Length: 532
View 1 (cartoon, one colour):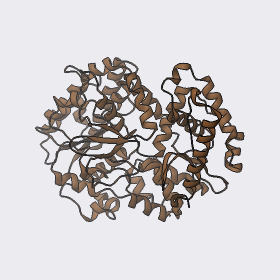
View 2 (cartoon, rainbow, N blue to C red):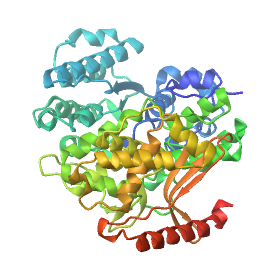
View 3 (cartoon, helix red, strand yellow):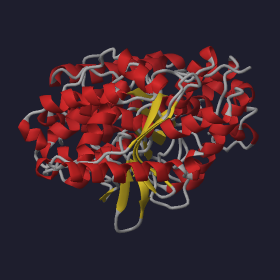
View 4 (cartoon, rainbow, N blue to C red):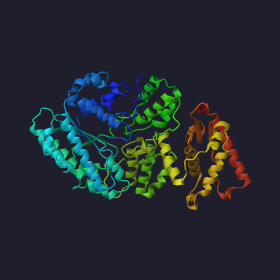
């Protein structure tokens, strides 16, 4: 049985060491047929960008010509090779992991990355003499100029293919808390802009193609004024499924690993729902890394993992915090998002940090980072929403931080719910939380805020035995909170119907009326075909 390639980014190891590979190589052909020589392609973290660029390396690198059949023979592109296969000297840059504590440290880190990449290029292609004129402590752009000049003197028949991974990694980290530092490094005199300007000059002579990946376009506006040869293909419908897994691909994988239908349904609930084009015909995709994480855990225990969100990325909620801190006025959007409300916006394709950032900019950044996704759209507006349950859990983690809730062991609460179907203990805990909230927290407080507190508390339980759904739609209405079992040994699923009364409306008659109304709703929901 093939190994699950969770966390694996080496394409050769993946293929040669019998790992399961979801074949995306047809998009090499799509890219070349598009006839765009310098595309920029953006996707959220953990969508397989790094593996994609490593695969491109093996396909285009002249050094790997003899390995072509072994690596690609069973894949789409191996059976349908393009004329450009194994015909380039590939120059790689990976700008993840740069030091960002201050501008000087960032510059030195960026410069070292550029120098190391150029040195590796010269070594791999046995062109060490090209390093004679390249000074390690010089400007990144100067190093690149000397490499291009030296390469041109060789008068080779093949040209350079530049592949840049995580072009904006440092920018995504900086923009949340040091906006002036960010502006300085991408200004007209900044070293990042000079670097890309030099690449553009190289395209006039020795550079034939460039492929750039990243997460967000926040540096594109600053960069593109000098690097105006690139085309952003991120939102184009033909590339919607280039990364991530389609429903068909995940179904095939779960069948291969002998997973039952319930496992696929949980994968779909937790990790599906991403859409990167407003075209109504595109297919939604799963986050590939999270699917592989889940299946890896499942293979070892034959049970769903206790933690739905991979701990390696669960700290991403801090990015939500940084984004909201950029403009505290957007904090109200969090309530809309957590209540599964659809949000109308216009996707910003390029960010200009010289002007005040708008609501559309904020929502667009949330989209590019994967916290929101396209639900539908047209030429006038785009409707965004939370892509899936896994991402909702991250939002609730952030909301728990706002409420100062801690992940504490509460076995008595969860035991009463899971094995006896009782919520008395849960209600007691929620009552304690509400009493501790400041008076200002109750301004415009209503039923949906109570619901957020309840769901947030449940999701802070260390044992995630339930899928918690808000406003779950069934025949006859919407269940306020529905708790679905994730494990067979859990005896009870729970349905919670909320009624909110203000202090001035709490007579015995009104309370009895509301309780009766709630019981009728629950009885009606219980007969719905969705719960049968």
